Length: 299
Image: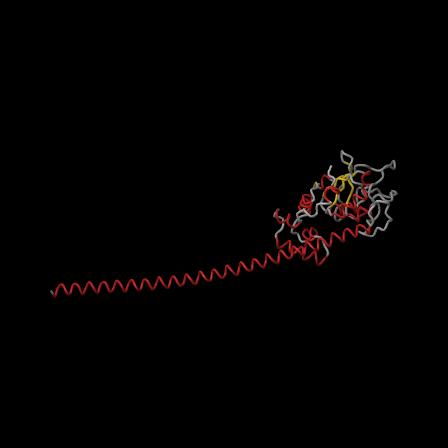
């Protein structure tokens, strides 16, 4: 079992940054990371959202990298399926707020929860709602979004919950009332994924003892946001320093190149001067030989 909430909520200081992992895997370059961080700071979007929206990486590659960053399993779309008992553990409002879907129970009795982007605050909230025995897996964000828009729990003719519903995201051009898995004119079960999804952060239900409230979640999220802002500032300082070092190196290379060119010119001039002196010496030697011959003839 992968008790992700327990293991991963305490190692954020040692976890490699997402941007660094994406660069190391050759999925993006440094310029794209810097641009994405700048865009995210302006729009409030998360790094992964910007990278996917700009087409610089795919949802699948992003999800695989996030899974490795948090030491979680990555789940392909084709492997996603849901169990009604697991789904009933989390209300639609809670799932929408946390962007997480309880899928099924594994062989050890832990509830498997799918999410697109793990965060300390999100994992802490899931632990408060579902208990410590959870097995988090990472999936593509569009799969989570499609699941939140769908009625994953329906009723069969006997009125019992249908268990083991296979997840098939609705087609992009299909209207909400045209989904093949939605029976017409049947009563809906309140609280089990029926009705329109609630907006993130709009749930205001009093929490039971030991459960995380919306205020708790907001405080944790603010703390993490402040930490991320600090890390971003540090990253920008590193980038600025690296750029300054690159400029200094470029200036030094240009200076040495100029100096080398000047020395090369000086060497060429000295070589030309030496050749001229050699020619003069040869001429003087010939003159001396001619004088010697003349003296010999005279004597």
